Image (cartoon, rainbow, N blue to C red):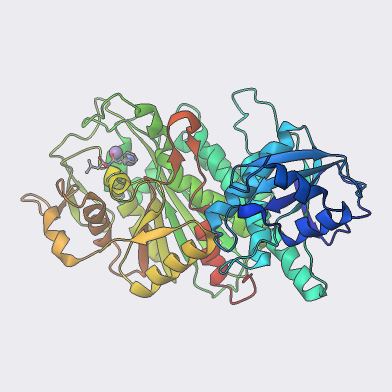
Length: 500
Ligand code: BES
Ligand code: MN
Ligand code: ZN
């Protein structure tokens, strides 16, 4: 997908299609007003007939509009003036690109970054438009023939005269493209089935990124090396599977050598059957998405490399399959983690925390500025927050605030839950330092409490993405979240240069 920004002269341009916005109560956006004038009121006349309302989701394709050299004008509904949000704007762009592809249009001008609103700058809208066009362009075509959308080239009309403003707009598109690419990478990894996307596959993919990016170095630890490091908790999960575990470490060096890195840790359970505490059959296929945390940190590494951010970032992916083999862990088994703390496994389906705890201990060696782990960790998070925000828990309020801000600014939101000591007692075990489950109440919090016992030395936050990583039902598929949030968080650490 080719996306650029330009100031378009609507009178002289010869495009297959120009996309403009219609607001609630038939109000026109600035560019729609311009086209209306060029066509001597043709647009207002159509609106008066009532063929399009201006609601988000509405659209109308017009052919041979008088006064223009372009073949078509696509009117798209943009809702109430001034009430724009990230989500609404993405829907508007997504509707527009779907309509363009329905009409088999390859090349279009989209003029929707001039929508009036209080919170989103026009440059931010250019970035969000770019992201949404990438989102809409995505097809999972590796294992299924699917017709590719026709749209290949989009020019975003940007009505700014000053070169500095145009420069910002070009940066906005560049950021949108980097996030779009990272997000679609995460979606591809997430959508692949468990028989293909194994820990070995994830490791091979991670290693393959090296050839595109000179600042990236990837190391893979195998089972023997993990044994040597004492990762008894992680290995207790993988021993119930015939697929070997992999521990992936991707190191991006965009900053100075001495700069302490930001570390991202992603849960990479390539299939979660539950193990001996086996899950019920309904929707068990969706547990192939249990590596979406891994996919999101790998996708974020793609975005970071595309943008060449001037910081150091490490992505760590502990990857295993959770299966009920004869060698699998049994409820009541006690294992020793890399930290030396012992864990009584009361439920083999609480496996995510068992692999993350060793990865978090391993991360200490990088002396990180901050560590964020990302995991499809608890069904309880889906019950608490649904599919809109990720759950956020942290041992440092400043870090939590930075992540909340990155979520709000990117439109890929998180919501904080309490990590109070009061919950810790739910993890008490009579036989080991802790149990791996904390009972029915506050499942997302007790999972984070478990992790907090391995992050005492770290500036750490945990994102539970169980509700946001994939969609079920007719639109089943990975979303690529929280690549936008993580990329935003990392851009924010680079000073003001990526602010839009
Ligand atoms: N991968 C699951 C969490 C999950 C379940 C995510 C459903 C999305 C949808 C995780 O490994 C798990 O099984 N968690 C258990 C924990 C419980 C045994 C304490 C859960 O949430 O039921
Ligand atoms: Mn599980
Ligand atoms: Zn799991």
